[in-house]
Image 1 (cartoon, helix red, strand yellow):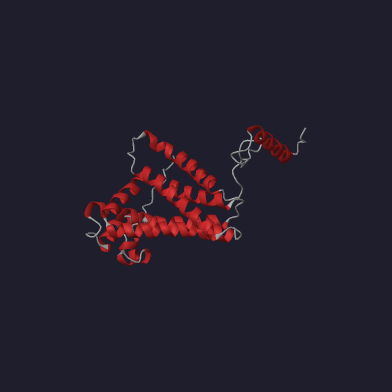
Image 2 (cartoon, rainbow, N blue to C red; image 1 turned 135 degrees about the horizontal axis):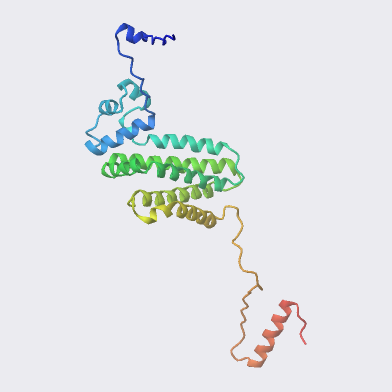
Amino acid sequence: MTVPPRNHPSSDEASGTAPAPARQRSLTRVEVADVAVRLFRERGYEATSATEIAEAAGVSRSTFFRQFRSKDDVIFADHDELLGQIARHFELPHADPWLAVCDAATMVFERFRERLEVVRIRDLVVRETPALRDRETVMVIRYERMFASYLRSSLPAVPALAAIRFAAAVTATHNYELRRLIRTSADHARSDDLPSELAAELAGVRLMFRPDGRPPAGPAGPARDLAVAVFPASMDPGDVARAVEERLRGAAGTPVT
């Protein structure tokens, strides 16, 4: 006869205590910021304290202030992360630094497209809060300066002003398309076309600036020179015609017969 094995009670069962609950994963810096953005929208930016954000995110006040210097630093936390990604992107070798800057702008666009729900909430909060609009402007300048600095270090022969202008144009083009994405309703069919539109517009910026220094190629064909002739009004028209013909043939290297 086989005796079934006995199930031995666990140490928790033996002691009569319940098992300890699984430890919750700590929120990342960006996740805490996302909690804060939603609170700002619900309660207002000025009315929401750092302590309330920490409680809603499930972190201690000391942890919150290790992640952020103040409440003002919370709302653009993902920008800090993106700027770090772009810095690493620029550390890699790139055959075309101008294209590398456009690719960096595309990285930012795609990151915000992945987080579109909370980005749209933040846009509403920023538009309603003058102080945050000022900080957003400063954040845009950080991207622009990073782009220009990379170009100037990668292409020392290029005039500094050309790099600065290109960086400003790329940043402005990206911001225009990003605002269209954020402020287009989710069910709008054109929202899916915006990434390809951004790519086309950035290609247009590169073409506009011609950073390689070569003039746009035109259609092949004979050169179209302009000749201006000045003769006395009293001169016989036949003599004028013959003189013009002689000059034109001489310029073209054709012997006069």
